[in-house]
Image (cartoon, rainbow over all chains, first blue to last red; front, side, top):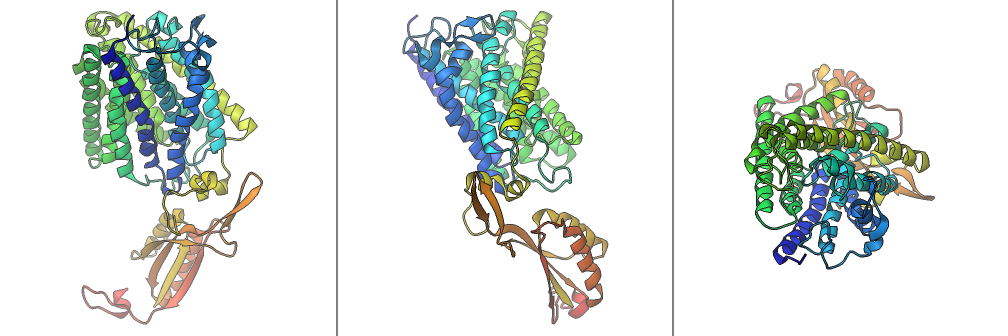
Length: 411
Length: 112
């Protein structure tokens, strides 16, 4: 196949946009924690840009997209980018350089690991988070990416659809977040209901804006071409985000007052939900998918709060449940007329697609939860997961990084 | 009339507020402050090296009380602010000459 310049330009641009999502996430999460942990929370995402950015090119890409081994994992043929060059891959994205596809996929790996950090802010030891990230990336992300997206991956062969990562990114991260938060335990003072209000909601809104922008690269870029399909995914993405932001705002209005935090959280939930479906559904289906995401995630967030589990920034409720709804909604609303690589879903008379989606969801839920639990146990037994109680009360900015978000003698 | 200046842990504001409300004291002023006591902040370790965290964030609560209410208010603050660990803070009691409510011009105990 020869290289298509428009496709290449769009995928490279999309890769840069997806990269920008991780700094966006850093501010989204950073604004949600108390001021003494603002910097450390941002650091968690930025550290992933470094750590996963390196691991991806060394072996991550190869394990995810290398030649299939029994449907489970990719081979190490692409170790250190061996054989990944300016010519297109014969299998993936055959109109753009293999390097462009590789780096686009790498940005997804980075943000997936960064997403988990929202569950463990304000109390995890930074060294433990780094060790956890290496292990989680290696033993959870790369196999799941291979199962769903790798040529020969067993969920892909079964027929599970995931356009841009509802399963690989949002379910994997969201369920792992819940698992790791359960293992780590609540923040000091959480059980006593000490106030833990967001330190800076405008920062959260800024981060959400960057995420929303970057998500066009995430979803429309996942078309891996720059034609009609990318436009369809682009429009579906914005419809779902807008619908979910609107519905979440109305929900918060019904119970209290219309909340800025609600609007931005709703947008993120809508974006997570449309991710697996974006290139498989008619764009207008973004309305039911976004509305469903807002309602489901809103009540899941309230439910999580009632359980007393300190999954601090609701990665499970928003990304885990948003991704779950989106993956199932793909089985309901998908239409083969949108994408020749897609299938008709339930509403077009193919209920089996919903079953394939359900299998993908359940498998990744179970795998991510269990593997994260095991990896967390290993890290806890070796270097310990938590900072000391004094370090936690001083805040991770000072105790883990020796830096503060704000100057001056006080903070 | 006395002014109570209490330097407390930030997370103890809510319980203190509640215990003062129970005594009928609703008015108070709070300020975010940084403070250190005899321990000069906290000593923490990074690897084998020790380091000091100076001036930990605290809240200062100021309440003006009538003389006869002083000891129940002090008791309430101490009870709800104490954890038993270093860093619980301190309370200072200062005599107040007079007080004026700006809106009405009331002064003395009527203005508290």
